[in-house]
Image (cartoon, rainbow, N blue to C red; front, side, top):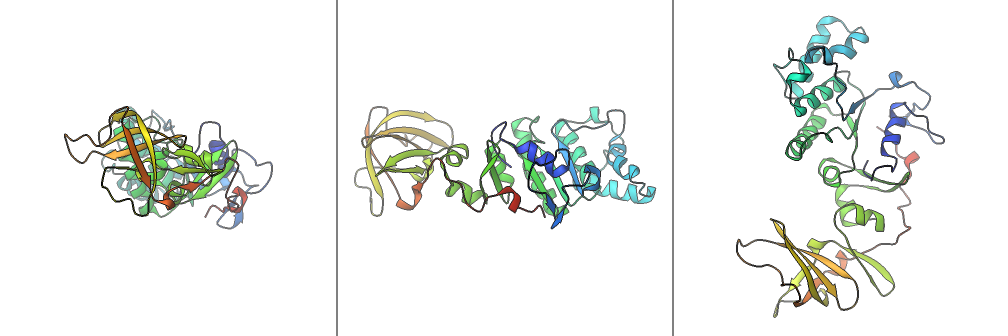
Length: 312
């Protein structure tokens, strides 16, 4: 679930968990209506950003806590605890206290504590938000691997578009309490349903031509040199107004003669070569017609209604 702060992601997660009651509609788990069940009676567990670990308990005791409350026999508790520790790559850390672990390790303990109860659905509310960028990227990969191993549904709340695109099979884009689009990461990026989705997910170039609003991703636009083939391309003339080197790409802003402006992402394939025009230079840009996606401000995909989506 992806969207800006205040768009309804966490409220929706709380409704699935049973901490909030929906005003209308219902929550289904595997086809069963669980809207009237208390949180403890639903086969879901939640992982929070702040870990919520017991600081006076060891890692092993933290992970076993829910099992002991459920009166799972001691031998079975130990077996499932050790299995969960191995799954989150923390075998051998069971006797440590949470304050002896790094932020990434504490997040893994919180994850192990949640999956040891074997819920049908795991709810994650911005669980990586407190980690630095490099560790967050590492944990994104590990969470995907863990999800694949345990084989249960993860419902993941984030406002980070890169995180959502990296980790998800399906993304629901929230805006002011509504779902604007629900689709695969590729479809969401390549075919945004409307202007909000196009602008929120990735960088979008919005231009208006012949009364239609179009969006084109920066990497789909080419700078066309003299003599370059233009077969099958829509071409427009313009002037370079900005150029910024950002490592893998150079971002060039072009004011178009026909109106509007586009950002072009040019790959820095040569270490010394300047890939784009200099500021003030007259240039020609081009893109394939299918890469210009029609968007309208008020559109939503008809199939995207929250109550139609079962959690399964």
